[in-house]
Image (tube, rainbow, N blue to C red; front, side):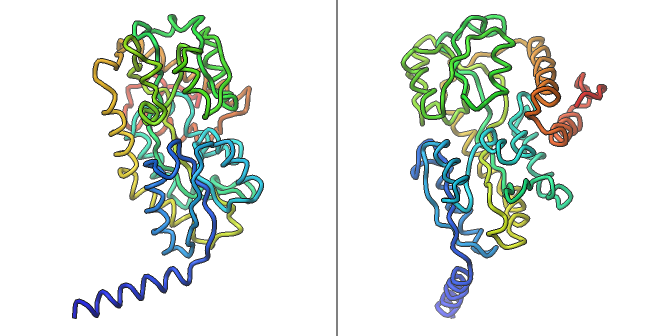
Length: 331
């Protein structure tokens, strides 16, 4: 009886795959096919077979190349970080806005909102559509000198900033840091070789990109999330079944903690003494500074999406109504 049941399950699974259309999914992961994100996307591929798509996964260690290949039509879908997605789809690209998502709990709520049919239209821009958002980890400042623990001390310090990340360039200039242009594939080397004193990244980069080399014995990590890196599945919707994106976003919500676990484990690998705490009063001041920056980037540079900023504010104020911003109508 057991053998018959297993045989029936195998035949059913084979039938689902046979009926699914084969499409390509280019996946950015700093560690390539051996990385945690790529491994989790293998699970996503299995789930997608039930929604009518059998993905052929292609790993990329260079995010810019993955983005360009998708734009050129060499990928039917692509997995990129939210900041890179912003050039295709500003709504979900805004999730990585400075200071907008203070914790993983906040991000879980935002991802939950995205699964609502009411927000489906905001996740499309022409033929581009965001089909899923997963956490890649909170973004922290990595320093070669852990005595630096205030914004004022960043003045004059050389800070590696991603060339396409206009928001971070604006923020760095506001605090007086010396901006040094970098790419995903070069910023770690610049930090590790002492060409810059500071860089920003999720904890996953500590081991994957060997940032501990740049930190040396005197460096540290500021224990204050600047933003939340997200891995986002971006598709050309015309090539996918009509219900694919909705099913995908639902799956992303249900499996949020799987990806969160990856980020939390990476944070635990950074030795305790390397974390640099900042005073509570400074945190409140930085929250206000980030708010000012988000409003500027929404209204002047037109980088951030107004609707997404409003959704994230609602999430912050629902979890902590005492926040000073909750009485304001600026986002």
